[in-house]
Image 1 (tube, rainbow, N blue to C red):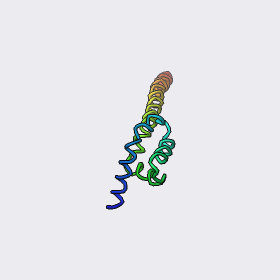
Image 2 (cartoon, rainbow, N blue to C red; image 1 turned 45 degrees about the horizontal axis):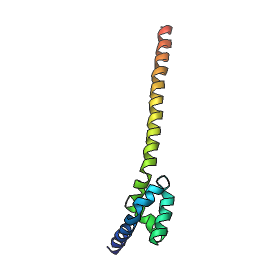
Image 3 (cartoon, helix red, strand yellow; image 1 turned 90 degrees about the vertical axis):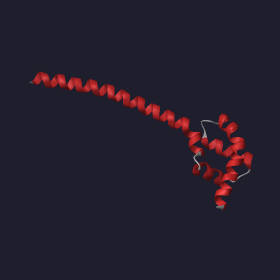
Image 4 (tube, helix red, strand yellow; image 1 turned 90 degrees about the horizontal axis):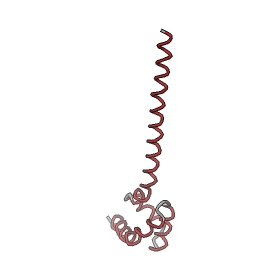
Length: 98
């Protein structure tokens, strides 16, 4: 119970600064972590643990994850377009052999 209370106290301290720091370093979760440690004077491992435990880290990396997924989707769609052309070519070749 005490550890949860301590976690929430850390979260409250982080909340005061997280918005500004995330805006400034939005593409660098490690830099966000460093800045939060600096302004809150909370040990780095505690901040990191709370961020991981309460999905704050996910908030910081969401844009990167989204971009990664978009790139993967684009690649899959390109592959699907190529598959149709490949299958059509194979079908035409098979019909000629019959």
